Length: 119
Image 1 (cartoon, rainbow, N blue to C red):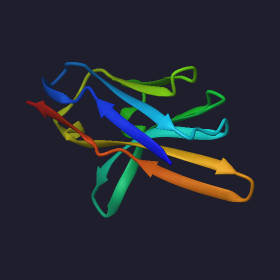
Image 2 (image 1 turned 135 degrees about the vertical axis):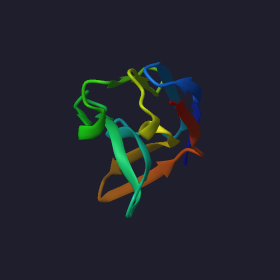
Image 3 (image 1 turned 120 degrees about the vertical axis):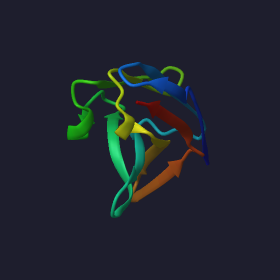
Image 4 (image 1 turned 90 degrees about the horizontal axis):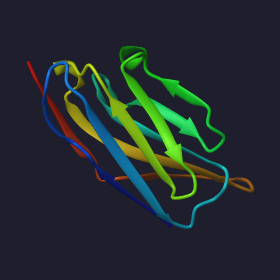
């Protein structure tokens, strides 16, 4: 089992910055990916930014150039630096870890952290 604990959400004015943190604990495999998701119209959750254990990153088009994802594998933590925030970034942000074993894949979710951007 894996537990994910998120922190760093809050209220910020448009144009401001926030940094989200997600710490993973438990049975961590070396082959994994971590990311941040938020609800989207017509979808349960959309990927905001993701990063693999090897350091490959991908971003939603709406956040490219504004958000940066990074991770520290030594402490199983992923960070999301959010700059130039817009009101449309307001959402609950969820951390997710996907792990791959031999013939298996498992997804784990955090409980979410609220980000509110005022105009």
